[in-house]
Length: 210
Image 1 (tube, rainbow, N blue to C red):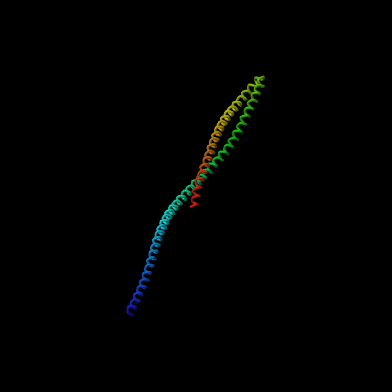
Image 2 (image 1 turned 60 degrees about the horizontal axis):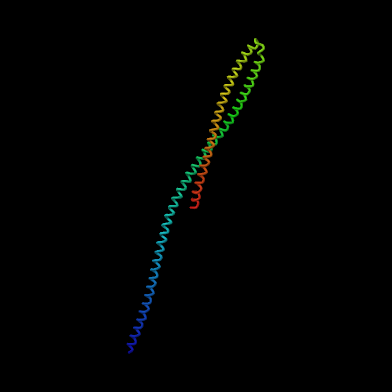
């Protein structure tokens, strides 16, 4: 009877031990399942983060490439702007030279006009003198011949002066035409420079934002 009790106690002890082992195993199994679920979740999150990193890396490469292109475009635009500014300076210098030459031509035309007026007054004076000397035929003949020669010389000078005046007037008109064309080209260049500055500003702004 005592042996049966001992055997029963032993079986109870074994059952309790088995129950504890079963409980521990169940606990470990749940923990393993929890860890597997967590690992799966972390692996999924890792894949998502790797995808985000891949997209961001690709975007960074695109941005870097675009930045290089923008820098190149800005460099070319600055070069074009420098060339346009140099061209504008050259045209402004030409315009200034034309203005100075126009002033000189205007002065020459005024001087020639004054000379022509003096010659016309002198011609009128000579004509009056010829009329007054008509009474003395003998004395007037020699004087008339002399005055006629001088008058012819003056007419030749007047003709030459008129010809020079006409040429100077034509030259003046030509220089005025060139001056207007130069001013028109300057206005056009200013418009081109303004357009370039407007096109450069968005690139500079995007570069700054990037």
